Amino acid sequence: MGKLTFEPIWFDSLGAKSMCTLVRTPDVSVLIDSGAAVMQPSFPAPWAKKLYWLARAELAIKQVAKRADVVIISHYHYDHFTDFDRGLYEGKLLLVKNPNNYINDSQRGRAESFFDTLCREFGGVGLEDVTHERKPKRYGNPLDDIPRARDKDFGDYNRRRKQLFKLGMKWFNNRVKNWNSSREIPELKFKGVEVRFPEGNEFNFGRTKLRFTPPMFHGIEFSRVGWVFATVIECGKEKFIHSSDLSGIYIEDYAEWLTREDPTVLILDGPPTYMKFMLIRINLDRCIENTCEVIKRSKNLKLVIYDHHLLREKKYRERTRRVWETASRKGVRIMTAAEYLGKRAVIDALDG
Image 1 (cartoon, rainbow, N blue to C red):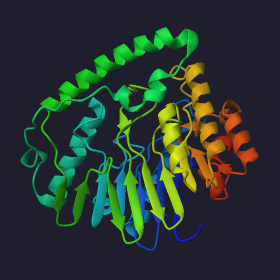
Image 2 (image 1 turned 90 degrees about the vertical axis):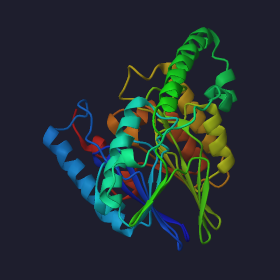
Image 3 (image 1 turned 135 degrees about the vertical axis):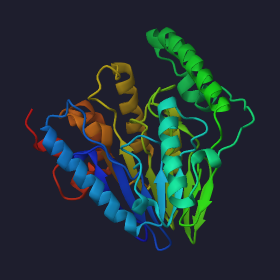
């Protein structure tokens, strides 16, 4: 790469859950999703080893944060943000997931804890001192934002999808009630830290441009784990995309967006094949097909870091074989973060 460089700080292929990445240009250093969490019980390693990897991940993130000007938090899952470390956030511009809408209940609770500590550490006030009542807002059907996925023909599965969409809208409308009844957390600026909500917006640092998507489903339509946003960083002719927690590319409209963007480097989490109860075959096939289409239709894509959820069980390459083969035929480099760093993925080195 040229003026834009990136460094995977910690990913699942290194032994702890994370997608933490440092991106640097001549204008700005950006740390994306500065969090890590311990591997799930089914991961075939001793508990002590999992805790060791987590400790290493947390230390690596804390150390690299010293080199960052901007810290991005795409959502409030603990493998994507740290709650709380003053040294990690002090002196930074924080571009964080809007906690007021397009957020599920558990993440709203985590956001409140995060913002309360941030207010007390940097502003000497509590969260209750900065929040305010909000005017109720109307929200449209989120399926209208993803018409290709909404209208896709799944044959015999169409009836089931309609049922799931109906249940999803009921869940969504209940979330809207919660958003409208909660006090609004504003963007903040204290001595030592500034917090902005970047979804759908653009920020310029010299010749470097940071763009952010509107909220995207964390997985399939109406995924109960909430919403995330993706980050696009452009510098000259180079374009870097950190897709965050899409859990693969289930939604056809997201695949179309990635194809239009046509990045030079794509950080992509694969489907969570270890969670078999969540991953029915039709959605796995859909995810693989969409990912292959992004690779096949790309013109400028040179590298895909394919990691995160995918690296939590040993058969990840077998279950996503078409993706790796498509990239090979296209001449696109595809690898885990560990491989990019010249290491072997932890899961590949484990017995069991």
